[in-house]
Length: 257
Image (cartoon, rainbow, N blue to C red; front, side, top):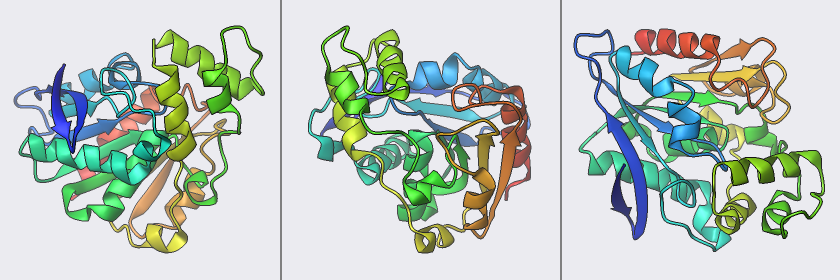
């Protein structure tokens, strides 16, 4: 991986060239992963990078601050959505990319939405996966995840979701203290007025069994240039790499201005 300085924070990323002659024409797309994940787990292992580059898209994926090979920070205020959106924008600037399609999953979708709101000229299209109406109402993940991440090994988690995130974070060899700081301050919502101001072409993709994201169609209704894609029989974990998800994204990218 490569890395760069994002306002004093080292951010790791990959930049994979597009297959020459494919339909995407080398257009850049930036991928932003979810909480407790990293670029490899979210985008490489699920074959997103392979499919996007083969379709002709220059594919860039970062490890969010506190995740993967990026710098670990331990103050919760370092992980606001606008700060992480700033990392994504500075990565594009570092690479000399003026405008890119931006796809995020779960927390990454929240970051991407803030990016589209605060930096509209840099976002050609917006692909929000695993994030629906809970971007507005703030529901979704339960309390107790930070405490579960910080607890000594073997300590019972306060709820099943917190236990799942602790196991996932250990499997990805994450810095549990950095993730605890992140989850405490990275769940900013957007108001209906803010969403109505995002006129970027947008695709909202949520699994039909996803209880974390909230309704995709309800979120899309609040945005002037958005449509929703529901993935049958997929939950928050299984929707990201779903075949219909990839097909829907590639179709959307081929049709957006």
